[in-house]
Image 1: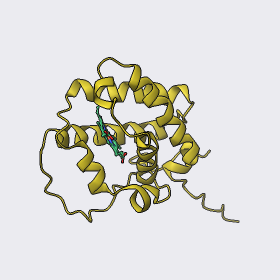
Image 2: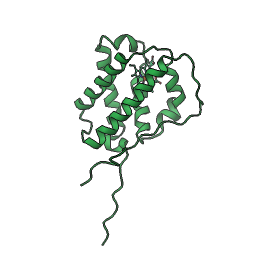
Image 3: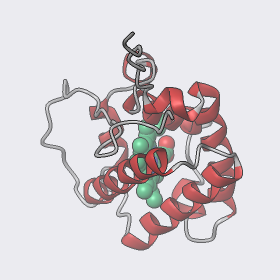
Image 4: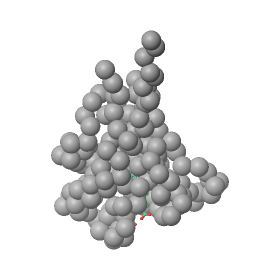
Length: 159
Ligand code: HEM
């Protein structure tokens, strides 16, 4: 008899669903506000910021369309970075603290998941830095949210 085909989970599902993303950004922004380089950048952020970023990343990873339907859009997210004049040093610290937090909250650490996770974080943060050094935005406001998948490994190792 043929083996049933195993369904490949989304990155969102594999990470642990929305509670995992909300915990990640909650702990991450606690670190950000303790960090001498990043604290001045984020000290005026809204109280909703950490949840919005969690929902944004969750949606990119195949989760529910919470950010794009209730909280913002791809266009709005890009707009939030305009004119912030972020540097490569800011970006590297942001990435380092996020990955440190991912380990602390025990986000899955299998090679397949982490390579996809890091690839998106590298891509997203580099775009954020580029946009932060622009003052205006040439972008279709209806531009859909980015979608990220498993990349070359194609999915988690399921045995
Ligand atoms: C994958 C990378 C990133 C994602 C997905 C992301 C996502 C977001 C989102 C969704 C918002 C809007 C939050 C809201 O609606 O309240 C936002 C705002 C912002 N982001 Fe990012 N971001 C990324 C990288 C960065 C980096 C590297 C920095 C700086 C080191 C940064 C600095 C900011 C700042 C300063 C704001 C405005 C905060 C405020 O005053 O409300 N972001 N980001």
